[in-house]
Image (spheres, rainbow, N blue to C red):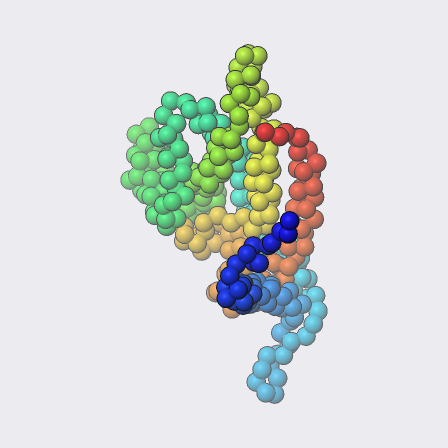
Length: 311
């Protein structure tokens, strides 16, 4: 019996227009990808190796090729007065907070909500709501909570203390924003983890209960191996933002002052405020080159330890 493909089963008038239709549908996203990703990133790489060498007779900016932008980056990193070192340290803080604290906490919270603890529906809405509320609104709420005459201020004053201006101090500005990141950082991963846990066969959980395992062993020895693909995916995605981790500095309006700048915000300032392009391009290229082997190495590692569980 002769088998026909789906295109051969279609009427001839529709079959003739199938290829042009597919090409037309693909043309826009492919063109968009080429212009706004390939061309932009290629141009950024080129700019990283170009240095302004004055103005030519025709009035155009003259460039020379070299590694001066990278040399400037290493020099400024060594000198404490420049902001790039502070930006790097803060970026690592935001990444570490997400990777080592927020993701594990989100996983534990997801497990207890999966076990349907008392009020789990309320907590699900509570933890996910910051993800669906405007970031600007959340920052305003948070600033009112910690600001003058807010609940925290009143509580500290009740015990005879005085709350300092948290966002205008070098010692407290970044920790204050880090606390905000914990507050709003649970949403999306909770949905992912609960979705993965919800697919675990009930027979497996019941077998563990019959064997009398504790909730801790159930979490580590039963649930975690079965949802490991989801965990590893979120960890790899988090690691891709190793040098892109950036707190909501723009929303908090610190302008990078009080030691709150991050690499992303530092690059933004160079481009937006100073109209400098080649130097921040070099910074981006450098951190991209450094992060690539780290990300691929970590991805190989999590795939290596992936438990062979099928269900």
